[in-house]
Amino acid sequence: MAYVITSPCIDVKDGACVQCCPVDCIYEGERTLYIHPDECISCGVCVSVCPTEAIYHEDEVPQAEVRFTCVNREFFDVPVSALGSPGGACDVGKISCDHPVVAGWPARAVN
Image (cartoon, rainbow, N blue to C red; front, top):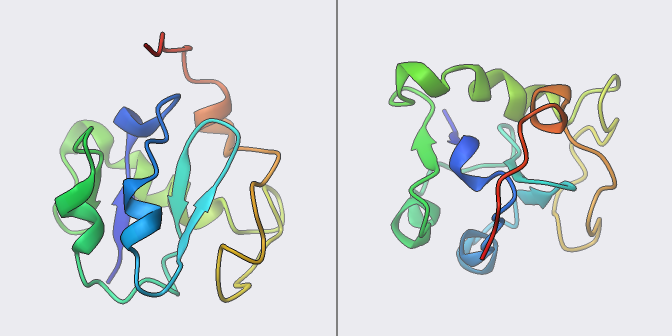
């Protein structure tokens, strides 16, 4: 089981979760962050530092955000980023794409 980043992260990408992740499984897309479901160890540290409350355990994602469970998983597949399981985000850097759901999300004004 893994954690999932949901819509409140879109156009915010605070990054506190990236800094505290002990296994480096949070990857940066153009508009949001993504947790690799096969690399996540379900420690939950990211949840406690997320200022937008965008991260949930996949079994606890609110109904309105459930599609983000697939969005996080599919981001790493061939049709989207083709990253597969690189084994750590710091060596990959920012990915210049997003899942189509995120790419089509209405822009959010960020202060």
